[in-house]
Image (cartoon, rainbow, N blue to C red; front, side):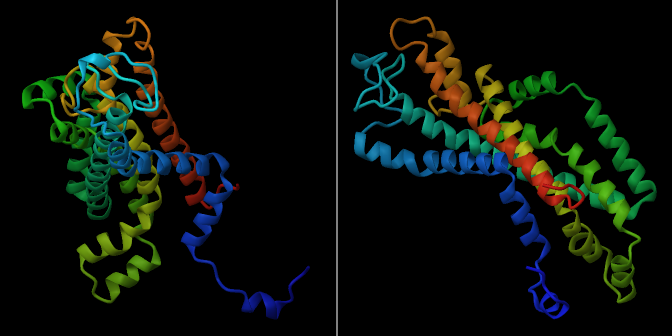
Length: 299
């Protein structure tokens, strides 16, 4: 059916974000990734109290009489070397790992976006100083510094968040600066200046909000990367410390008993699968958001 000019004129206008949602829904792998992320997050944050209530299994509860139990109606994923319920520890540990990834990614992107806006809009010596500092930070060897800082400040939740924020903002700063450089001389910015808008209003209200596309994509990808980073540092004993579980220290404990009889190998498969699916899902979401937010790409 062909619409005439009157019908086209009367058709409701679709907003940019509605267009983004339509394009995102057409990306099958992105929708699959979003579904996995939502499922795992709901399972960890809402499923743990339900599972603990009905089975009586707490992530800290030890019973040496039930070491290395195979999956059963009482312990769905079996038990570990101390007789603790594996599923309860995975679900509670998922809360910790996801929280580290989420908080550190949001804080990193926020810091990087502010630096990028200031640098791109103010220009001059401010831009030069901020970008040279960004170059220095990007040239530092991350892994040795992660290890040194974790040992210096003591392993823990907020230490990990601080480390990831301190070394995670540089890419976002450069991305946002590039967008701001392309926007700062356009008509809507000149109009804001003409009506007397302050620098802060122009940077935060006009330029930062119009830089949301790369910010959203970067946040999604950074969440997955920081979850892997938490798992790596916790596996090395420099992250989340027992008895508080995380996917990283669960894998560390499981690796010590991987050759134990009966249930040993399964102790590393279950948390490894949760970690793998979560990070993969975040990457799928990031790819889909990148395509949906860029109008030059065709789905």
